[in-house]
Length: 402
Image (cartoon, rainbow, N blue to C red):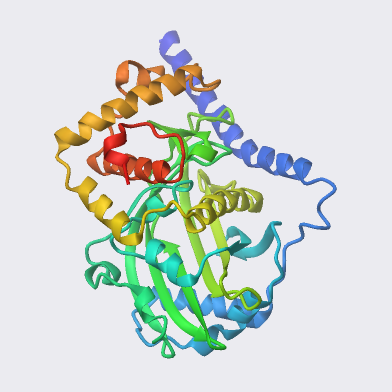
């Protein structure tokens, strides 16, 4: 009886301590943020968006949530003008909260035309993760999405969008591990794509909102962001922060990515990303604007490199290689993935974190044993992109040759 009561008391104590820790962690994050930004508070104040700009964002998210196909471009003119007039900056732009999510914006100058950007990044035959290798592990359109069914090619309407062109769809994504906790998640998004004119120039918008809470976060690691190498354990929790046992989730995310031809440099494109995110545990959001901005910068660096590269295969050749990889038999895919797993094991053995963590995941060539076919295809497609960009390639040359 004493033993039973002792166990019950211990369990109660453990639950109480865990609850206290859960309550304290967000405060620790906030304290760390305050310490890191000390002396920069005056420069990093949240911007107060003009009312007509905020109204434009509201219109986009309302239109996304509905089924209307008649888009009113006049509702977002102030939003487009705001982006068009924004001076170049590589600093964080903190946004007011939206639906309890913290936000940050980023302006990106891309030395590529909008046609080239659309031919790659909004091509139904090229998966998004191939063009966003630093932030997306795998992704895809749901089969009933208008964009997928119509096999939309937005770039073909650049000279015919005086009346806005609209496409809708639902996507799934799995992100790459975040850099502050190492978590990665699978989630679904509603997405809206709009092509229209503004003062004679083409404007393209991608609007997204998370549909529901994500799957539970898994432990991962940014191994080498410059080489687009990331580690996926398949084990629930966080890799760093001392809270590896916690079940974390992405509760909500929403974004507007607006592309417009630069008025001062017509051969270049301005990309302006508004993003809001809520993620954490026990219903608590521990994501701060600086975390969002850091992820946006990771996205921006890789995206610019790809769009500005002369080594990237043509969209047609790119799409053909993706189809070739997707048509491979499981046996052929396993053949290449086994080499990939050996390379990951070699990297992990010399990595300061992985050499002590997750040996049960990667030793003896086991790393990809539990990968789905979808994830294995994603590996091969990304290695193809890495080889084209002169990155470290972790599989046989044959499957990734251009």
